[in-house]
Image (cartoon, rainbow, N blue to C red; front, side, top):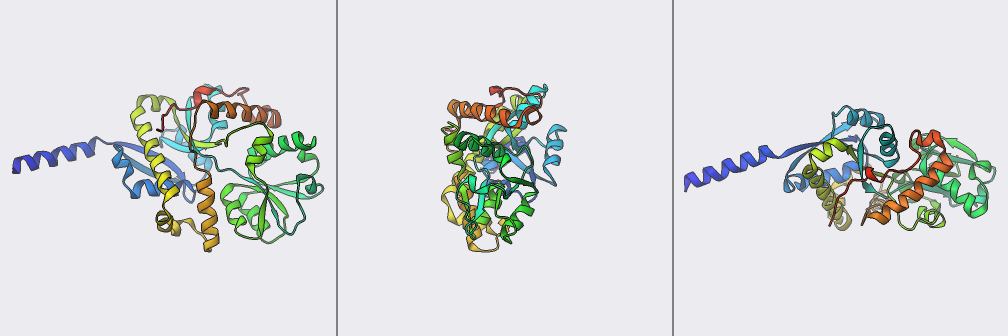
Amino acid sequence: MIHKLISILLLSIISLQAQENLRIGVLAFGTVNWELDVLKHHNLDKKYGFDLDVVELASKNAQLVSLQSKDVNMIVNDWIWVNTQKAKGKNFSFYPYSKATGTLLVNENSNINTLLDLKGKHLGIAGGVYDKTWLLFRAYSKSKYDIDLKDIVNPLFASAPILYKKMQDDSLQAAINFWHFNAKLESKNIKALIEISEILKELDIQKDVSFVGWTFDTKFANENKDLINAFLKASKESKEILKNSDEEWNRIKEQMSVKNDKEFEALKNGYKKGIIEEFDENSIGDLQKVFKILLKEGGEKFVEDSTSLDNSIFWNFDSK
């Protein structure tokens, strides 16, 4: 009996030692941490046979450098970057993480009810001249009103935190910002002028699309398919927990840095709305449409060497 117990113990130790390690680079205060915290808390990495190592990095650029230098195996990034790298002969793969994206918010007392009401006003834009949401709004205004939005507003390009503060203190009436800043603002006297789903519908895009996703070296992924797919399964289960468990949200509330319950609920609901239920060939077809729109609006400086969207960048994973 003792020999049997020793054998079982040794096998358990060997099994633990055999588990592969996956290093994911994240921004120290990014929303990706919420999911990874859930994953680790519930030992989902162990459940699916790997060890997750979360590496905190200082900036998006640090993430890109760490991925390309192989200091980390995976980051969250957008498929535009992945596609551009592919056109340059550098192979990375992408699998959707979230469909949460920015939109255009206005102060409720601003008397701004349509895009046309923005004429002559300052419009804050996070992400720069080539911000994807900004480009989609320009395409929408052309389709809906036959007007390029940039020709009727005074664009104010600034960092997301600055725009957040300017919207809060009412020194700016309208801004396009990232989803988590928007969620916090919507808990106050600020509303979405147009939901991104309406923008996409006008542009003949049928599904909600994902701009950001898990990004990793294709060669590494092909050599470690079981590891990548094991992580994606654990990621999916983590999202299911966040989708269905208020108790789990209460557990991670402290790390969300919310000032009050309204902000907490807004961030929680915004995250849930961003959860992707499916990603298939139809989804990729819609991303092809999005790419063509972004190429038309942003031009070659935006897409650099890529003039078409290469379907091979999307990792083939059956989430069912």
